[in-house]
Image 1: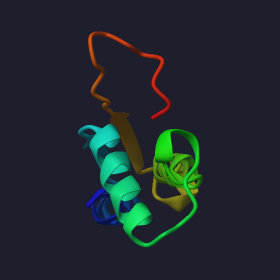
Image 2: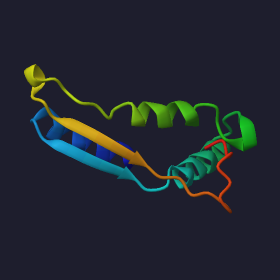
Image 3: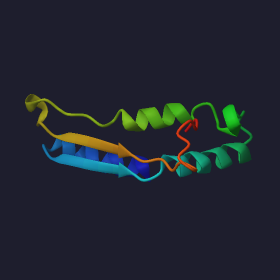
Image 4: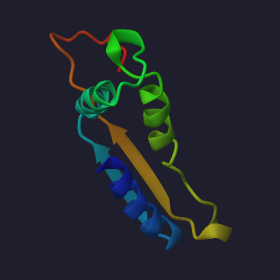
Length: 93
């Protein structure tokens, strides 16, 4: 769902609109990706997360941009949210 949402947002951005995308809890998306990867027997990394989960999240967030006026002047603003347990902000994801 995050990738579908940002793809739709890019369409608006390329048409000169300003878009706000709120990624509600990327930790749950990472946990679901971890479960799927373990079922597919992909090699786990830290805390059993696949090594590319961090790459996938960074690639998703890097799609937020501000185009110059020659390209339409649209923008995407991304607000990623993570759920912490007892205020612990030292989690990997």
